[in-house]
Length: 342
Image (tube, rainbow, N blue to C red; front, top):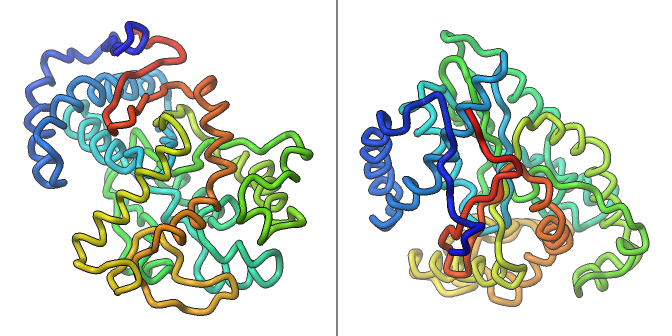
């Protein structure tokens, strides 16, 4: 690790030495529950603990709950980070924390089919800005921020196996007040592209062949400029998990697919279910849930490529904390925009 990437544990009113044993014990239990390697305990103690301390410090400086966005391309570990931060903050820093994902705000399948018919067929595929229910997202944040100790807040859930929102009765429930709201997603905090000429130039074969007039790209960009800008504007803190490159994102996502194939004992196109692949084609017709071939996976990633490349280029310069991820998936360091202080 370079000297500039080394973690300096932030100063905090919380005495880290007093909570360290509790954090380690909690982490060991979570590592076992999540089937992570034992070495991950050291990762949590070195990187997640100072990050949790910084979040708790920032929240104490406010008179309201802190809203924290966690950004990262596919495979960077957003969900894992959010899970551990939630437990560490709640159980070790007396800082009640709730979390939810941008993925759980996807429009329903029927809504995306209608969007595909009215605007562009590529919008049937969930993922890009314009395929989320921001009204629902704002409602969730509002309810969490206003919740009292005796309140319960339903957290939306999306069933990727069915490619549709889960019934409300199946949504998890956050109980009690909330000091920190963790909100994670691949494009959380993203900004609209300013150069219309760059936007018009196809970046990959998906854009060239299926969006030749740029209508889909312009719609996505317009959504970022309008509703998403206001939604992401609610963030008090932005954490970015920085992948080394777009090539790594594709490699990691391919490995995820192959591991899933191994777990389900199904080769591509032979059954099983996939957590990311769309269950609908561009016309909205149902497809059987199956694993993606390498060529299908490459096409799928192309939906995300333009915005992912843009975020990798510009977001590290403005995120409050950048979590550097190495090619071997390990954290190589934390960089604070402004070093934490007491």
